Image (cartoon, rainbow, N blue to C red; front, side, top):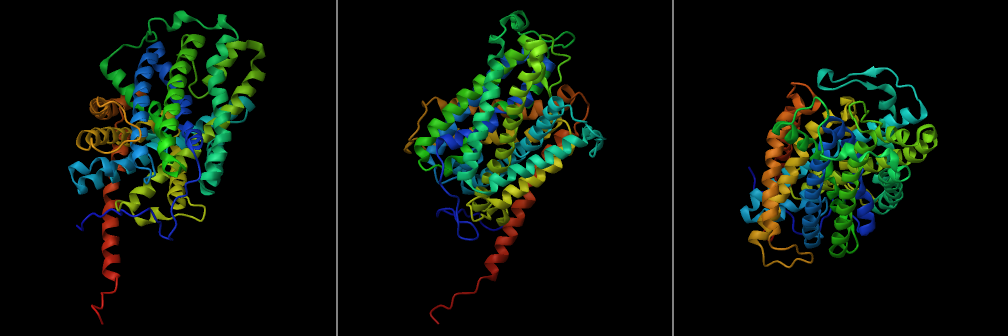
Length: 495
C-alpha cells in the first residue's frame, strides 16, 4: 500500500479552482439552521414514545450539542483553511497518533458524517410532503414498499413531492456559497418564524397548556422504564439534537473565519437548545397524552388543539413556513457533507471524483452524489427507520471528532487558539466521546427493537455496511494514485 500523503498547499480542485470565501457568520448560521430544523422529526416521535420523560433526555443531549458547537468553534478558528466542518478537522487533531492514523481518522470520519447527513434530505422531504397532504388535503396515492420489511409503505404523492424538492434544492447548492447562503438566509428566517411561533403559541391561550402533563416527566401509560429504552432513544435523538454543528461546514468559506466561527457556532448552539427543549415541552403540555399523536403532522395538531374552530387559518400561517423550513435542511444535507467529501478527497483518502469544483466554486459532483443517494433513501418511507441506519455514521463521526479535540488540546497546548475554551474542556470532550461510543454500540443495537418496534437488526447492519464502504473507496484512491504516478514521464536528468 502506498504512503499516505496530504497536500499542504491551499486547496485546488482538478480544474485549478478552489472553494470561494464569500459569506460570513450569518450565512453559516442560516444554512446551519438545517440542524435545528431536525426538531420537526425527532421531538414529535420522542414524546409520542416517551411522553414527558423525553424532555429531560432531549435537554441533556442537546446541551452536549452546545458543548460540541463551542469545541468546533475553537477548531474552526484555528483551521480556516479546511472546509467541511466537524470531520474535516480530524486529520489535524489526530496527528499526535501519527500521520497514517490521522489520515484514516479524517477519511472515515468524513464518510461517516456523509452517512449521517445526506439522509436529512429524504427525511425532511417526507415530513414536508406529509404537511402538504395534511394542509391542502391532497390524495396520498398508491403506497409503495420498495425495500420490503426493512422499509415501510410510502405514498406516491410523498415520493413525487420529495423527489421534486430534492432536485429543486440542488439548484441553489450548485450555484455557489454566496447564492446558497443568501437563499438559505431567506429560508432561515422563514424557518425561525414557525419554530419560534410554535413554542410561543400557548401564550395566546394559556388555558390550553397543561403543566401537570409535564410535571414529573412521566412515561406514557403502559410504557415501562428501562436502561435499554433510554439508551436506544438517546441513540436516535443524537442524530438530531447534535446537528446544530452543521454551521461549521461553512466556516472555511467565510471571509473572516477566525471571527465568524465563534459567533456562528455560539448562536447556533443557543437557538438549537431553546428550540429542541421547548418544542417537546409544548407538545406534551398541549396534547397531554401523546399516544394518538401523528409524529408527521403534530405541529398542525397542536394548533388545532389550541385554536379549535379557528385553527385552519393558523395552520396555513404556521404550516406553510414550516414546509419552507424543512426544505432548508434539504439544502444543507446536499451541500454540507459534500464539503466534507471534497476536503477528504483533497487529503487523499477518497476518490478524486469528489474533488470536482464547478465554475461557481462548489463541489458539484459530491453534491450530485448526495442528491442521488437521498432519492434512493426516500423509499425507506419511515423517518425513524432512516434515523437508525443513518446514525451509525453520524454518531461515530461525532465520537471521533470529540476524541480528536481531546488529543489536540492534550498534546498541542502550545498552539495559538483564537477561540479557546477552558483547559478542562479536553476532559469533557473525552467523556463525551466515550459516552457517545457506548450509545452508538449499545443504543444502536437496541434501537430497531425498542424504537422502531421490530426485532430487526438489519437496519443496524445496513448502517455498519455503508460505513465500512469507506475501505473500498480508500483502496480505489490508492490504486488510482498509483496508476497516475506510474503514468508520469520520467525526469530527463539533465538531458
